[in-house]
Length: 334
Image 1: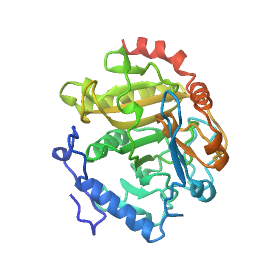
Image 2 (image 1 turned 60 degrees about the horizontal axis):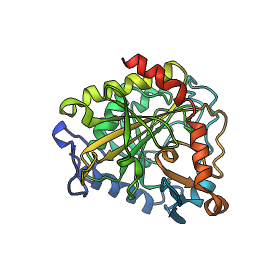
Image 3 (image 1 turned 120 degrees about the vertical axis):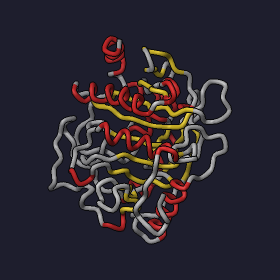
Image 4 (image 1 turned 60 degrees about the vertical axis):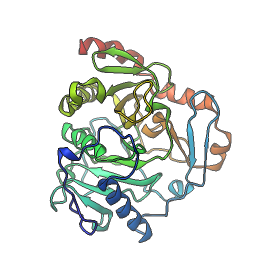
């Protein structure tokens, strides 16, 4: 593992934490948080993270609302994305152009190819970007390698609050250069233990939740085999990509039914309606964190007036492709 003064970080399989009985900080958590705080304290971020207000939205699903006015006013203008197969454009902003000070951890022995960088417009504590194969200049299309890497990094944490999310092209990705988001959300979320319905072998669906989607649980795989877990997830993701279906992914710690500690990892996959053009970030955007239950609100009026009924309607509409895809995926997997 790395010293705090170094950017280079190495890990091995023995460092993976499959169950969290006593939440805390692993060496990976400590390194990530210390370096993120250093970036915040030294004005590397566009603003110091301030959640102006937060509350639970009253209703059945207990959505978490957070008002972040700085992000609304100071974030980089999202890229104009018009296609799920849009190629990487080196003339646009991309992560080869970020200053060295934004890179806080190097996972590639100093080569700068696989790195963790601060998100300079954070919406959550410890908000960073994992940039897999950064120097290959790949578009924002999931690769099997990046999926395996993000799950490995996720398992290095001893915090049940760490989340990993991916916004795909035409599904509210703001930069067309391969990246994942990591952040700590220190709230218990419904999707950590919501009841799932089995679709077919090792693939589940959200049965009573407005953002209808698919779920894979690490516990469903014998011996919690990571290679088989990644292979099954990627099979679904590649199928969606090849069929030009926009999609998002969220990874979270989870509890098995009746369990009191975090003994599982869930990967949620949402197929979404295609959204093209420059994203309107002025209010409530139904991106991946919103499907997960975190509503990143960017103006006071929306924070005060938004109702659960409006959120339900929005999430149901965005994830409408699920209904047509569900029987097709079941047939494919069988």
